[in-house]
Image 1: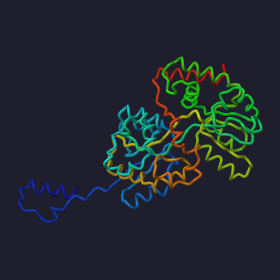
Image 2: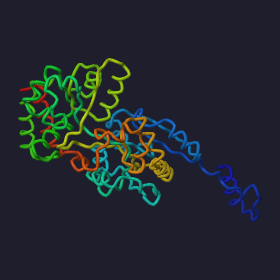
Image 3: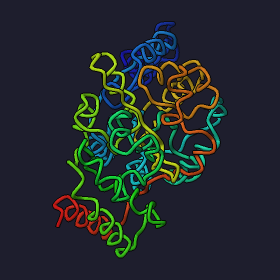
Image 4: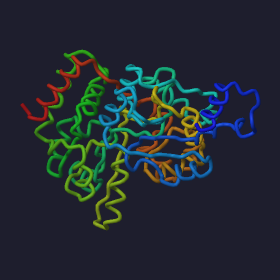
Length: 370
């Protein structure tokens, strides 16, 4: 800035000769990158190594809800160059125009992504224009094998939603405890799909059908909660839950570490299940776009993304990175769906406000059991 002022002063005075000092260039601005990610959702050594190797000054802040992230994005100036929304929020935010398209010429490692999963993800990001998928998972059935076998026998349909939605099964499982996520956006699409209806239905009458199914089994559900089921299944306090794939993996390990004799297993039902995923996206207001692309391309390196999956316990959509992930994640079809199982998965989408109100009303009726 001092050099610029000096040059202007010389020009105003009409000087015709410039000194070597006056010709000095303005120092180049340090390269920066500001990232806003979920708490505890990155292997710490990855951003550190990127910053050390690239010389980019990296600021890494965290949030704990999609709503917190969305509030920043909708101001039009989030202050970040990369953010990590979950797919249904990504969908809404793309439509709101808060992101800028990716420059894939700067992402040569895009070639490592799984085409099958990318196709599924176009439900929220048409043409895969705005988001680099990071981690993904499903909503499925977690269970205690010993307790379920004791109640339903060795042939219990643990790989089917029949385990829960058929009254003859869940009425018996009631004695050892059944729990569900307190999430209409997860549970009602599963009920709709089980009935052969569109999991993203916009027809009010479909939600009444889903409600009828849920009310039939409601007396046999111990509770609806999106966190309690994890510790309860690891402690042996319940025997079946509908929850997130990664949660069952993590709490199965907790049970092992506790040495309490409880085994936690999980299955992706053969009828299909919802796929959720988190992605990195670049806000329209980002100031360090080149650096954002540089980090994204680094993250797409198979050898970089693989240890992150090992650390977090979630699969990633990198077809060349997954072979490097530990077998307990890579080869577990309940965590990493096979190519065949991928065909049964469906991606959830935001609903129109009118239908969202219908879904909320139906959910409140189900929870109250009336």
